[in-house]
Image (cartoon, rainbow, N blue to C red; front, top):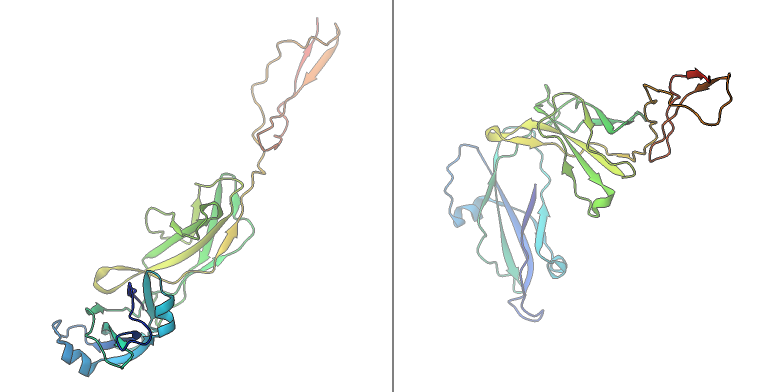
Amino acid sequence: MILSWPAPQRNAPDDSVQSIRRIDIYRLAEKPNAPLPLTEEEFATRSTLIGSVTYDQIKKATDTLSYTDTLELAGEPARLRYAIRYVNASNQRAAFSNFLLIEPAGRIAKPPTVIVTGNEIREGSVVISWQPPAANIDGSTPVNLLGYNVYRTAESQGKASQTLINTSLISGEQFIDKNIRYGENYRYIVRSVSLGTGGAQVESLNSNPISVSPRDVFPPSAPAAITIAQDENVESGKRYYYYLTAVDQAGNVSPPSEVVSETVP
């Protein structure tokens, strides 16, 4: 679970007791059907301090701060309630932030395994294949699987942003990306999609990545329907044979066309 919140826009000087020296993160595990209202005093009594953001992290922060809570999701379902609060140089604690409530699901599929075959590049497309996950992240089976999402990063994008390239969930174990450009470098990952709490779709972690650099090495089709208008550099009475090849912009040469012939009168 990754918690994030706006970083303090400014802080008191280091020698001031009002200087924010750390940010404490608290967590309370509740039953999913527990009453939603909860006072700050009740939360303070029942919650657990699970970690802190240090003074150095606060000083180096730009727009946001974050904290990662590693969860063990085996066992009974639970609703988690989080809150943070600032602590000053005198170890005085501020009031709690707002509560964040979430019901994590343990029966979420593990990520699939992308298969590298060496035959991913086809004419005008890239084919990505994978093996389905064998279990959920808590080790349980059957796998809670609705389908898959495929993400692509293009080197020309500059930033390493992942773009979802399928328009609907993929039910099989293969995806053909036809929206490619030759000469581009692509990186693909696949995520399993499971049914989460409240009917929401929940994605797995990333699969192993695969990098593909499609190049145009595919020759054009051979010319067809060849006709002879007349070759001026010919001799009367001789029979001449002709065939054509096509060359595309990448320099790929097609197979020869059918051979046609003509006898010069």
